[in-house]
Each structure stands twice: as C-alpha cells, then as structure tokens.
Length: 249
Ligand code: NAP
Image (cartoon, rainbow, N blue to C red):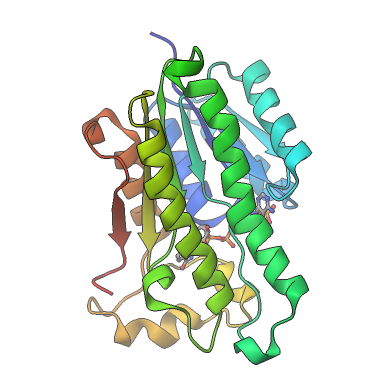
C-alpha cells in the first residue's frame, strides 16, 4: 500500500501547521505550502522529519494560477500520487465597515480565499478523480463560522468569501460524489493563531471569548483533529458536510 500524500495550503503556521503535524503522525507524506514565511514552513517540515515522517516545503501563492500548477507538479514529482487536499490558506484584512472597503481589498480577499481554493481543488480533482484515471481521495475546505455570522463591523468581505467556500463545498461534493472524491468543510470559530493580528487585533480571541458558549478560544490542534477525521476513511459516507469547531458558537 502506497503512503497517503496530502497537500495542505498555508501550512507554515496556525491551523495548517497543526494539520501538517497531525497528518504526518497518521502516516501521510505532507506538502507544507506557504507563501512568504520560509523559516516557519521549514520548521514544520523539520519537526515532521525529526519524528520519522516525510515532508516538503513548497512556496506558492494560491491566488496565482501558475504557482498553484507548479505546486501540484512538485507534489507529483517529490511525493507521488496525491490522496488529499486541505484548502487551508486564507487571509483577512484590517477590521472595517463596508463603507471603508475598496475594490482592491475585496479582490485580494477573494483571490486568495475563493479563487485559490477553486484552483487548488481543480488541480486535486485532475489527479484524484476516478473518471480521470485517478484512485480517488478527499478534500477539506477551511470555511469559518463567519460564513453564517456575517462578520458585521469587522470583515463582511472575509465572511462572504467563506460563504462562497460553503457553496463550493456543497456543489463540488455533488459533482464528485461518484468519482471517488469526498469534499467537506470545517468551520472554525475563534482559534488562537496569527490571523487575528492581520485583522489588526492580535488579542481578538481573548476579547470575544466570553461570548462563546464554552467561554474559551479554540486551539489549532483541535481544528486539525476535525480536518483529519473528515479526510479519513472513518468519514467514508460524509460528503458535502460541515463540521463546526467553534465551542458552541
Ligand atoms: P494564519 O495563522 O494567519 O496562517 C495563514 C497561513 O496561510 C500561513 O501559513 C500563510 O503562509 C498562508 N498563506 C496566506 N496567504 C497565502 C497565499 N496567498 N498562498 C499560500 N499560502 C498563504 O491562519 P489560520 O488562523 O491558521 O487560518 C487557517 C484557515 O482557517 C484560514 O482559511 C482561515 O480563514 C480559517 N479560519 C481561521 C480561524 C481562526 O480563528 N484562526 C477561524 C475561522 C477560520 P505564510 O506563513 O508564508 O505567510
């Protein structure tokens, strides 16, 4: 039996990094994609290799189609047949209301969070679909509870990009259901990662945690467990599903 091969976008930090470490523990060869932070990506790869696993770090901007094509070709060459994709790379920008947003910001958010996820999914489908000669596989998309809460006053653009991811998950799951590929999404709540600093509020999790039914923020490794379950054979009849990891929010 061949070793499973997983590509995780944005795996140098946060939820992606936690998922990379867990996937390696479960026996996968892991592609740790990143866009800028090479040291962080290499630290994740080193941790996997030191633990006896197999991993590579590959720089690629998921918003750039040619980068994505090269990223998947690198996986083909260096790790072998792809079996799973985690569409994890995602960005948000400084908190603001709609009347302050310009088109350039909206284009950045949608290019990374939506177009990037679509193009990565396309490349994964080309390799995994049983209709195209592949052996099947699984995709997990990182959505957010923001898709159902709306992000009012902070980032309705980001929340809307996650709404698009939810719809893509439903449609693609149906499109691929008879081609050996399951497509599901995880919707994290507020998780302790660097993403909140990019929204201009590094301490956001602690500010909002009392409004969460469990009264705490989540950890990246708790989200990673949900992602890996949806990718696993234990989730063999789940497709087009959403797993909220949000402390009851
Ligand atoms: P994070 O800590 O900010 O890490 C973002 C990761 O994405 C980094 O590895 C970064 O690479 C990479 N990245 C950013 N833009 C990229 C691009 N254009 N191409 C390739 N990689 C790119 O984020 P996180 O909090 O772990 O979030 C991961 C996912 O979960 C996102 O989709 C996010 O929307 C979702 N989510 C997070 C939360 C939360 O509270 N944290 C809640 C709901 C949903 P570099 O290191 O090279 O910059």
